[in-house]
Length: 128
Ligand code: ATP
Ligand code: MG
Image (cartoon, rainbow, N blue to C red; front, top):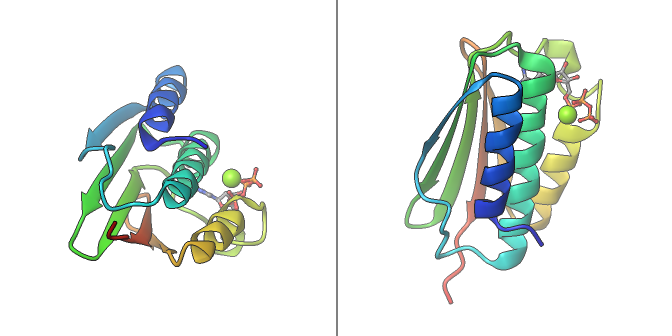
């Protein structure tokens, strides 16, 4: 399984190679998240950032890790072209795969289009 901290190292390298500025807010040291959920989050983050590199033409990618009392949110925002409406679930399997994996851990994903693309990934906390 992949820890979020390790995936962040890789996406930092990926974005650097693509000459896209990377900004990280929040800590990847998760306390209320199960390992399986963290693995799913890592896969989602990888796919989201791969999409930014492949499709967005962005100059900036911001990742925000936001814990709350009940949930963990990860927001991946770029300042690129935005997703053309018809492409959202038709063209590839990445976004669909993210949704399916998130459902498996009772999470969800929303796509916002506002001067680029923002993916909002949500998973529930577990209390150990
Ligand atoms: P795959 O992920 O299966 O390799 P893919 O990346 O084309 O292929 P998705 O990840 O499902 O498929 O994305 C679907 C489409 O949405 C993409 O083909 C692209 O047109 C568009 N897209 C996704 N993310 C972004 C983004 N950050 N900016 C602009 N367009 C995007
Ligand atoms: Mg993709």
